[in-house]
Length: 295
Figure 1 (cartoon, rainbow, N blue to C red):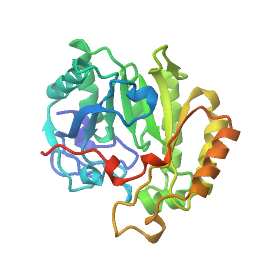
Figure 2 (figure 1 turned 90 degrees about the vertical axis):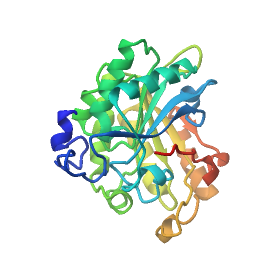
Figure 3 (figure 1 turned 90 degrees about the horizontal axis):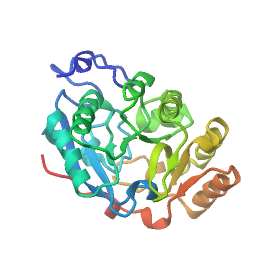
Figure 4 (figure 1 turned 30 degrees about the vertical axis):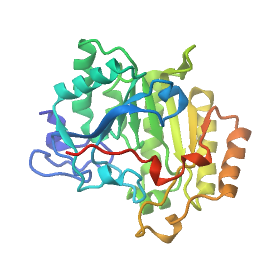
């Protein structure tokens, strides 16, 4: 058992709980839980490639966005398949043997010490494909520093600029402050992005931003900030896949984004000279949500 779980401050919430006795905001214990491990073809082209990304979805989440499309595995009461560090390393090696272009660790923050150990174990047994740390962005600089030399690619969200919306939708008024500094550390750790001759990403940072209904002005602030602070160092993935997943959502979140909202964001993306990816309309819909393994 990793000592970091005994006084958990792995994410900015800093619950300081002893996870051997009780759980904090994310509801994770000291036992790592995964909900899916498989080749995945719905990431950015430089991640999915032709063979797929070796994706491991972790259960629970330190952010808990009320509109999360993966709510079946991220909500506080969800349960996944318990797995040891050694078994997690074996999952990584198995995905490599299936031809995965990379190992893609989805929502890893609350299990970072276990994941770090599993990566080391897997590398010692022959894992040699890039490691992708796929995070909601609500990270501490210390947690990112702890992964130096182990993670090749950071696939991170930058969800909100406004503290009002981050508090309303993700109970994290200070989201932007933490996420922007975590991204700065990610760039310090892995450098400017590099895409190989095979059109696959070898290292670097991809910043994802999901356009939410009614928040196109917040999206504009995010895109301008990325362009000004990080410019050509990162790739940006502008996402239009927002899909209402529950009838209990606030009225503002009960619709998909409009074509006008989408076009406004895309035009700014182009004007700012950002490099990366823009999702098309076919990305929207509940049928795009993966099937989860049973515990």
